[in-house]
Amino acid sequence: MPTKIIAVVNQKGGVGKTTTAENVAAQLATPKKPVLLVDLDPQGNVTSGLGLPKENLGAGTYEVLSGKVPLVDAVHESNSPGLLVLPTNANLAGAEVELVGELRREYRLREALEHAVYEYVIIDCPPSLGLLTVNALAAAHSVLIPVQAEYYALEGLGQLLHTIQRVRQGVNPSLELLGVVITMYDKRTSLSEQVKQEIKTYFGDKIFKTVIPRNVRLAEAPSFGKTIFEHDRWSKGARAYKQLAKEVSERA
Image 1 (cartoon, rainbow, N blue to C red):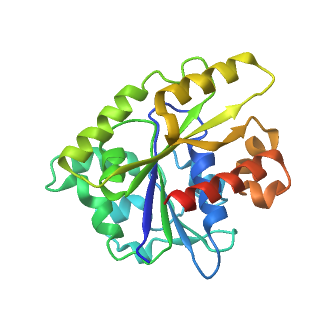
Image 2 (image 1 turned 180 degrees about the vertical axis):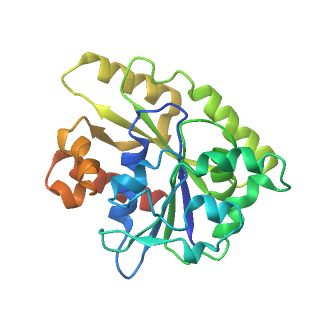
C-alpha cells in the first residue's frame, strides 16, 4: 500500500488543527503500521505537545526542508505506540525566507517524503497560507480542514479553498479535499448548531459525521506532553477522535 499523505490545514489559528493532526495520527498508528506526524508549524506545538524538547532537538523539519539531513535521520519516536514525529523549533521560521529564491521551492517536502514507508503521513500546517503550507499541499494526497464552531468559522475559508485550487492547477493536480471536521462544538449553544448547519450547506457530504466537542481533557493533554488517548482515553474528546480517525481511514 502506498503511503497516504494528509495535510491538516486552516490559516486561522486556534481552530484545533494541531489537536486534530496529533490525535488522528496517534489513533491511526500501530507498532506494525507506524504513522509519521510532520510538525510544519514554526511554533512547534506538535513537538512540545508530544513531550519532545524544542531545545537540543538535533535535526528536525528545518534541516530536512533545507536538504541538510535526510528524513530518516530527523524522525523521533513519541511515547504513543507507532507514532513517529518529524519535530520542529523556531529555526523553521527561517526556512520560509531562505527557500524563497530556491528552485522547486514548493516541492521540498514532497521530495523529502518520496521514499517514506509509513501507512500515513499527517502534516500539521502553520496558521498561514505561506510557502510552508504550499509545501504541505504540494506533498499531500488530500486535505483535512478543521473548522471551529464559532461565529467567524467560514471567514477565510474561501481564501483557503482558492489556495487549494491554485495548488491543484499548478503544483499538485491530484490533491483532494478529504473532508471538513467541526471542532470545539458546544451542543448547549444554538450558535454551535447554526454554524454546523451553515458549514453543512457549504460543504455538503465533505463534512465528517464526527463532531469534536469542547472538552477540558483535550485542552489539557498537550501540557502533559500526551495525546488524548494517553491522557484520558475514556473522555468525550478521545471518543470523538477515535471515531474521526475511523472516518479518515475509510475516506483515505
